[in-house]
Image (cartoon, rainbow, N blue to C red):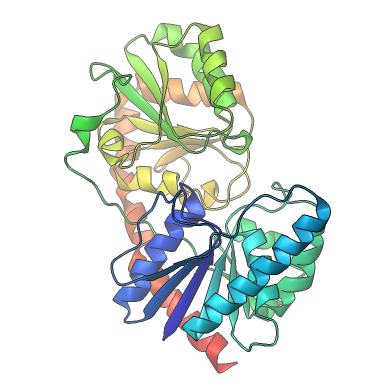
Length: 369
């Protein structure tokens, strides 16, 4: 089967990482796989598996005024339609709201079945009135709307039930055993590590995490909180850390291409996200044998982390509860080890093989229809 995957970019993000993992899984299943991105290749973070064809349209230029925006969007539609038609796919899979909408619109009257995928809780992430209206118009025209968690799916009851499906993201751990030699200098090898990973955005709640760690940090000088990632809030977060006088205990090294060497040496992962979809980092940390302390936010953490079995869920936005849960694992090694012993079970629950079986069944369904 010829599969075409459509994404805005291959930059550093959860949906982009999922695209790469799925592309590899589809190749293993014997499918021909192509990826079309609206961006060019200059901002790529992820590399596609060998054997995947890539078309980078480079049509994401900003529009200075309304008329230019209309013209540019029409041009994007034409370019995307032409690129996909050149591949003659049996199924098209699109990633994330705006790209989903553009893909469905661009392929009107072509007959190609389009599967759109939603990766975040849409009740928490507002994309704008125009895009919301377009989503309502286009999604019922898609062959299937696939959500990455039950929580995400709950927002799409307005889509006909026969067009809705939930398929979790696969968890695949690839570790560069040489990565430890290239750890950022700000990471203190002599300290015990707590790790957090994600874009430095409002969604990820790193301000809440810093505040929680700040409540207990002075009692634990031998511990270091490492926040991996980049984003628009870097300056604000660094200023907040400096204000708390914790620059030696809270470090923001930026993006690390292979974080697993850090995860393997950390004691646990902690996240204070305000909302999610299917947070891959929670599962990846568990797969590395780390307990996870995280907010029970909408949506996804509760479907990955089993409270008091392999991690601790705290009320969303409750900084004090987060601080107490972190302190519990910092002081009680037995409790930490008990949670860690069950953490790797996540790999079986979200294996690439099990996810591929669900996608294969979905392909048969949409092609037959």
